[in-house]
Each structure stands twice: as C-alpha cells, then as structure tokens.
Amino acid sequence: MSDTVSFGRENLAPYACLAAKSRGRLFSEPLSPTRTPFQRDRDRIIHSTAFRRLKHKTQVFVYHEGDHYRTRLTHSIEVAQIARSLARAFRVDEDLAEALALSHDFGHTPFGHTGEDALDELMQDYGGFDHNAQSLRIVTRLERHYAEFDGLNLSWETLEGLVKHNGPLIGESVSGSGPIPRPILEYNALHDLDLARHSGLEAQCAAIADDIAYDGHDLDDGLRAGLFDLDDLAQLPLAGEFLAEIRDLYPTLNRARTTHEMVRRQITAMVEDALATTNRKLASLSPETDEDIRSAGETLVTFSPEMADAEKSIKKFLYERMYRAPPVMRVRDNAQIIIRDLFGAYFAGDAQMPVDWELDWQDAGKKLDEQKRARLVADFLSGMTDRYAIFEHKRLFDATPDLR
Image (cartoon, rainbow, N blue to C red; front, side, top):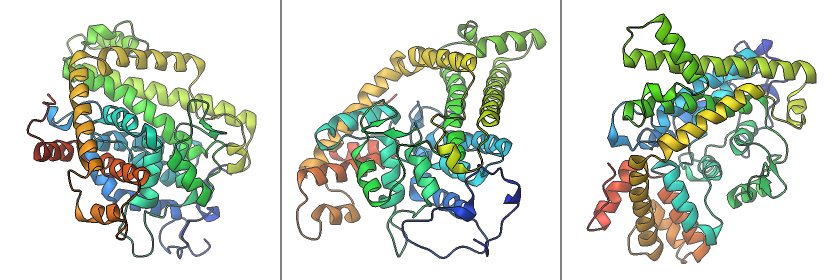
C-alpha cells in the first residue's frame, strides 16, 4: 500500500483495521493509486445493482404506502451516517464502517422480514434462507459486472464484517442463536473469514448503528402511519422522557416538529452512550492492533446496561404496536402469498425467469438438481424489489393480493 494515497489515515488508532494491512481480496487486483481498498469497497457497493434495488424494498411499509416512509435504501444511508460518526470518534476507518452500513441489508427479500420468513420456510429442505448469508452471496457471486470475477471482490475485512453483522459464528451457530447458514459455510471453505472470532471495530460500529437508526426511525414511521400516537410513548424509556422535556420547552410546537425533536434526541443519547461505554472498554483492554479487538472475547461497541434495557423496551413496544399491528399483519399475510406463489411457479418451471437466469437454470445444458434449482429460485426472488414482485405476480396469476 506504499503507493496508495493515505487521505489522512495517519491518525487512526492502532486498533483500527488499517487499509495498508488489509488481508486482500479473493481475486488479486492491483492497488489503486488514489483510493484505499476500503474506499474501493464502498464505491463498488454504491455502484452495484443490489444497492439501487434497495430504494424499492420494504423497511416496514411497502413502497407504495407513502413517499416519506423509510425504505431499505434510506435506512442504509441513515445507518451509514451513524456508523461513520462512531468510527470517527473511535479513530477507526470510516470508509470501512460506511461500506458495511451501506451493504448490510443487500440480502433482504421483497417485503422485508415478511418475505424472508416465507422464503426461509420454502427453503427448509434446501438449506434455509438467511438475509445475512444472502448479502454474502450477492457481493461474492450474484453481482455479475466485472470481466475477471463474479461478485464485487470486496476486501477480506468488508466480507468479515458483513458475515458477522450479528456477531461471531461459533461452532455450528451464529452467536449461539441458530445454525450457520449453508451459503456462509460454503464460502468460508473457499475463503476463510475467521467466523468464530469477533469482527473489527468498524463492523461493530455498523452493527450498533443499525439498531440506533431503526429504533428511532421506526418510531417516526409508526407515528406517521397512525399506528400509535405521541401520548402512547409517554411511558417509554428515552422517547417518553424526551417527549416530556420537549413539551415543557416548546408547549406550542406542532406534532411533526415534536416528533423530529424526540427522535433526534433519542439517536443522540444512544450514540453518546455507546461512545462512553465503548471507550471505557477500550481503555480497560488497551488494544494495540485490530487482532486484539477480534480476540477480546466480547463485542466492544455496546450500550451501557441501562441503555441496553431501554433499547429492549423500545424494540418490545415496536414489535407489539407496529410490527404486529393489524394493518401491518394484513399486508404481511398477503405478501407471503405473493412470495409462495412466485416460488412455486418458478421452481416448478411453470414461469420463466429472465434470460440470464434461465441460462443458470439449464446449467450449460444440464437440468439443475432440486437443491441447486431451489437456491437459484431463492436468489432470483430475494433480489426482487417489492414493485417487481407485485408486477411478476400480476403477470403470472389471475388475482394478486392487495398490499394496502
């Protein structure tokens, strides 16, 4: 990396993931004279097809339900802003943190977690479906634009952080929560991502930024949708406290400005708590390299116990009042019908996929076995936007469920 411009990275902390010491890429490429490896990763992610598709992928509300609700794209941009702020404060590589934030939802299906649940159920006999594993498949295999390789050929550190978004993959499970998805195991056999250890600090910044972002903006979107009102938040940690404070300071402030003030104060409080808590852990550990971060035996970028409890309460409220609200559940049930219908039609061969996918289907003139055929259909379906999935269902079936 001696010939690569440093762009002010001389002041990074010793425990940062240093671009000059990156473990490289699966397919060797010449270094850029103007960009670090992590900047190139970020740029490739932004210019990818998967990134563009995020604009029409559900966060909570289907894209046509309103112009101002978050999509996967706007969510990812908000996560990137918070991740960069955290990385800057810890003096680690902001570009790596941003790259991970922008790509962390690449593997999400149309219709959000609803589509993922339906596709996972359909794929149970074929290795299941997991959106983090699908993100890895997209950036290592399914993006097909470059002359010399499939995927984006991202650096090792970016792939590591993407796979470990929810923590280390220990033994046969993801941080003890469930089996390691088959696509991750298959790729890891080819390119070892050190699954059992923690990721670097930049990836940990992106992971907690994800929680901070959606805890705030899902409250905002839920209020906008009328699923609950400001008064319903009065007893909620953080949001309720800030709401009371804002009403005392600005008794005549309208609802929209009150909501914005509440959400931004909540995000600020969470960021500042994560900074203080993590700095205490770093001071205790005194890491000298990024390997010390990976070997710490715990996630270092965390909330304090008090903030973690408050954050759990916010998630519980959102689960009960938003994610499982009757209007959302009605759309969820209908969205699952669309996913199941499409999977069945493509898997049985009753519907044709686009030409490039049909070539994969034939596999150089030989029909794919059931396992590979199912994975191919899952790859195709998971890449769809909400809009395209609805369009395809209308094209193939006489009646399409209403997602309003």
